[in-house]
Length: 154
Length: 135
Image (tube, rainbow over all chains, first blue to last red):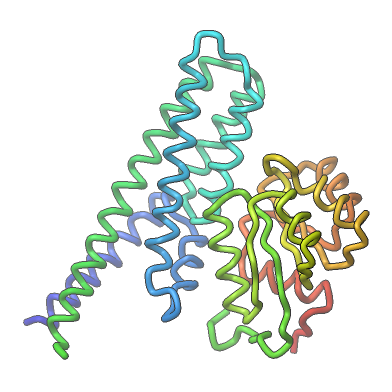
């Protein structure tokens, strides 16, 4: 019975990941992240993704503050923040976030303020969707670990 | 490439410095190097990389990001070469048009790779810079 719990949870994890890859939310760089996790860093994926969340939320806050300022004209700063977001999103395999950041960056390069505001909303939407999916994935993995622990008591 | 197929370069005692202001990239680049058995340190910008060398530290390989605050990768590479640092320096950056890439290479790079860095790209850098012979 307990074994079935672990198997069911693993199937749920596999299904969620397959869906995220199919939707283009994640790409092969997320697989690399998983492959880098090992006995010396058993929480590597969780740790790196949380660093990504911390960094991204600071950058998104800064972008919103810049664009909400009526006197705003520093598109170069927008570009620098977006380069950071594109870079870290690419590195963790967050393909859709990366792609919408690239589109946002194009608007900033044209000094297109309405385009930037729209771009920011799209990036925020994609980012929050990714974050929710990652939380769901981590919860499932935590449940699976607990179920496996119950199955093999010391 | 499976873990079993990856070369372990620990015996060669190679050392590397990761120069990047992005904490996600720092974590991933350090882990990629560690996976190949390469001891490594990390700094957050070009000035810290220069300061590390001024304090006497030396590395076989430097993975240098281009866009960083305080001192960027191009400035840092030029400065390190002016100091006589002969370490192999590989530029790694998210995007660079041909002009930016040329400027970065002319600053004194030995190699250049686009991010995201992967095991394959890192092995390509090591192979090109003669740290690793593919069998």
